Length: 304
Image (cartoon, rainbow, N blue to C red; front, side, top):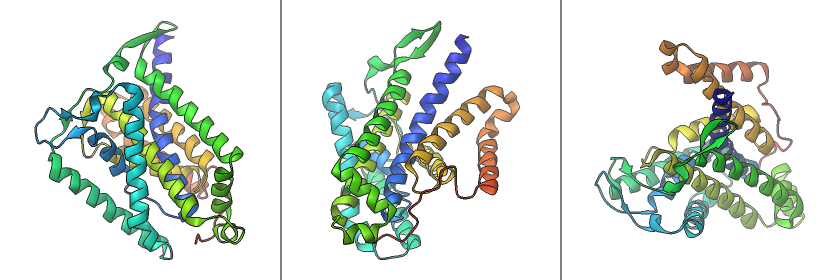
């Protein structure tokens, strides 16, 4: 029983990271038809914003020493601020460009962020200690689960419910949903494009920062490449769930997390290094039989 619970919590915890990443990507795609490949670099930037520039293996902590009730908002503001800055300085100038052009611009922006971090911190991973109290295990029905896993799952659920309420019950949320359905018509009806798009980027950046904080606390390491794998899996989850579909992205994120954990446990030891290949193979099968995704988004017209 305890082993099954451990697998369940591992699957939900990993799925939470993928779901949050996919949700951030889907938010931007919904209003701009942009697949933002700089999302993973925003994850890394949010954690390195807590450190002083240094090439040492042990990080020189800056804001990382703040108490948790100040640390968490600081990280979220860093991620949201960087994303909004990227929208103002880069993506706003490409709104009338093709999706392929915007995607290339997002690649370029990701490289700019990455090499900026390389210039300040070098490529050496940094040892950090963020929220060490969360590494303590708690006992649930006989299984010893790291407290951080429990909090990750609970926070993800809270974010999903909060975002759902925000989108359905607030004026700004309704404007974002209208923009996702038909941006041109929404603008004719008085929706302010800059406001909606900046809001989507801010939410996406805050979600990326939350992922970075969870990863940094789990691994005790700040690495410039730390957001790459999450970004890849989140993008796959976005495609499987249906591009532009927020519920589909979340469901697919949890399914990918569950598939990764279950395959890690059930595959023979010699086959476990190829776990991701089996996961991607399953993704190919899903897209062959349902290319529109699990929950295809209704808004498919060009934005702006």
